[in-house]
Length: 261
Image 1 (spheres, rainbow, N blue to C red):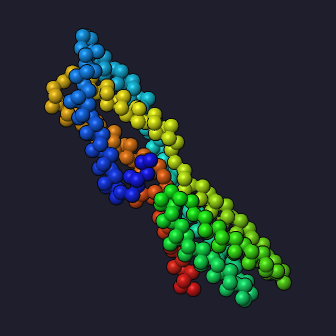
Image 2 (cartoon, rainbow, N blue to C red):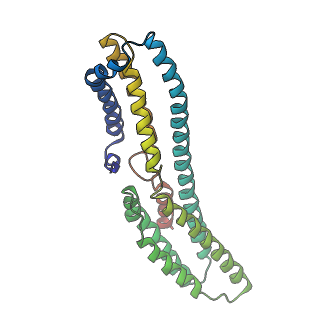
Image 3 (tube, rainbow, N blue to C red):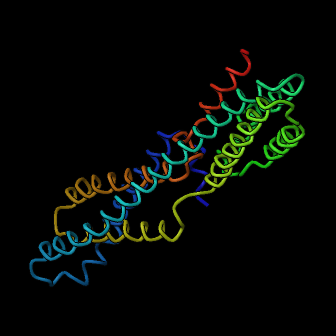
């Protein structure tokens, strides 16, 4: 339900997240803090008690945010590596089928160019909306059928054909991994735990006994950084969504090379 934030420019997404946390904290200071303090106002050394509890809580919550941030980054990096490997396998396959006799070489290369162009112009925009593209499979099936129709006539062609089939299977493997990564992301239950932890963190700071202006300033800084951390995780969570996403640069470079030949 929050995927609409990926349609915003990155700076707006980050600013919206940070400002929302600061406003939430300020609203809590003004309206919620007086009610919370009714339960603890008679506690001696309140600031020390709250500080100890907050320190323990921040250890666990900080570890959770750190692990999630690392997981989101690794997932994005692995998906980017998968895209690069798919483009590399496609490039090697394009070179291999170029050694086939005519008109097989021309037909097979045309099918690969068509697949690459479709991936850049149509598949990638769908991926950025969280939709797994399916029309590319039709083009892959057409290429596979044309590749299997070729019958080698010489030992050299047999070796070339076997290598092309191996590279085609390698390309298929990386393509399937890319398509599976379109809908990958942090599970909703984990986001729920992050949201609950953020609220508890802010609520504990509301309990500190300090001047009103200091509450707004110091707590606002904490809330702003907490919002920035959650923005960072959310921006990297879906590898193909938003401006901080994996671009089709590898396929664009490959297609430019195909067109020049």
